[in-house]
Structure formats: C-alpha cells, structure tokens
Length: 236
Image (cartoon, rainbow, N blue to C red; front, side):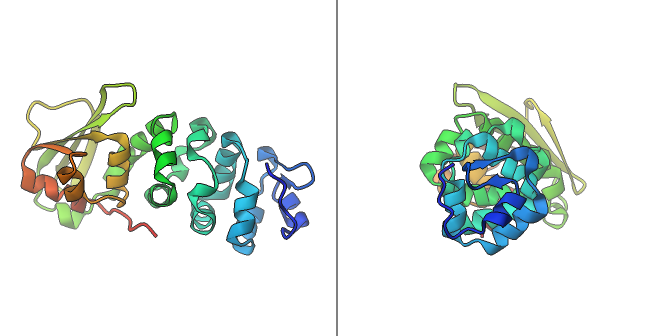
C-alpha cells in the first residue's frame, strides 16, 4: 500500500490493524469499531491514500471487517474508484455483507471500465447470485399484489452462454430457481453488467431496451414494470 499518511492519525490506524510504517494492512488484526471510527474521521483524500495500491484480498478483508454500514460510508466518502473492484477475491467476502444498498453504491460509484473488468472476473458470479438470492426479500408485496407470473432471466456469461434463472411471483411472494420455463410471461436477456446496473437502480429498463442492451420476449407491458415489483434502492 502506498504510504501517504502524513495527515492520518497513526495510532488510530495501528489500532484498526493498519501498519503505517510498513505500509501494510493486516486483515487478521482489523477491528470493526476502529475501522468505523477511521471512516468517520478521515476525509476522502486520506481514505483514498489508504486504499491506493492495496491488493484485492486486503480490500475484501477491509469490507468484510467493516460491515455493510461502514463499507457504505467508506464508498460514499472515497468512492469505489479508489480501488480496483475487479481485484477483490470473492472468497474474502461473506455474501451477507453485499446487501442491495451496498451493491447499488458499487455500481454507481465504480468507473465503467473497472465495472466491465469486474464483471469479466470472479466477482461477477458473486454479484449475480446475490441479486437473485435477495430477490424474495426485496419483493414489494403491495406492488406485486394480484401478480401471478414467471419471469425468465438469461444473464450473459463472459466466456459465452448464459446463467438462467426463473423468478415466480404469486400470492405476494417471490420464488427464485435456476433453469428455464417453457412458457414464462416474459423473458429478459442481457449481459451481467446491464443486469446488475438495472437491478440496483443504476440503469433505466426502457433505455436499456431501446439501446439493444436488454432483449425482451413476451409481455412487453409487463416487462416495463418488472423492476417496480421490487424495492430497488436509490443510489446515493
């Protein structure tokens, strides 16, 4: 890690598991409370200096130790551009930390070139699988009242082919499974970057359809309102 800590309180960094003199972060020594305090006290430039040059394994450990709330605050202050998301080892992160709001910030604040690179690497599968895993808990029961439909999703893979998911909505509940259905109400096909931007509130479905990034088969009117069936965070 680049050692640019002239204005950074060294004792606070050391207490959080960050060795200023050696320019290293010890994941095993990270203290969540101290990390939260650091993120609160340091300004954006200082946070960016701390993150600059840190490898993906350590970034993953930092996010994991910080927890969702502190990680969101860190992203809002320093921006995801302060580190390369594509270098994060998904094995270093408990998927529970990747709640919808945190993913929304990732896809809002990370520069497009790094997002594209990340969605061609191992983090891609983690993001996609977490979105689908969390869909039942994000269903807006009021908006989905009276809806009885199956939505087929085909999410492109970097090396070719697609991940296929079925989302069934009925009786105010949502069920997600892998595979395909012979007669879904609508089929949606897109690449994984478009998908993640769409479901985190960072892309407009109509614009994605008009630009050709989103392919729709079946009930077009229903497809236009699919995202409104879920509580999608407003990136901020």
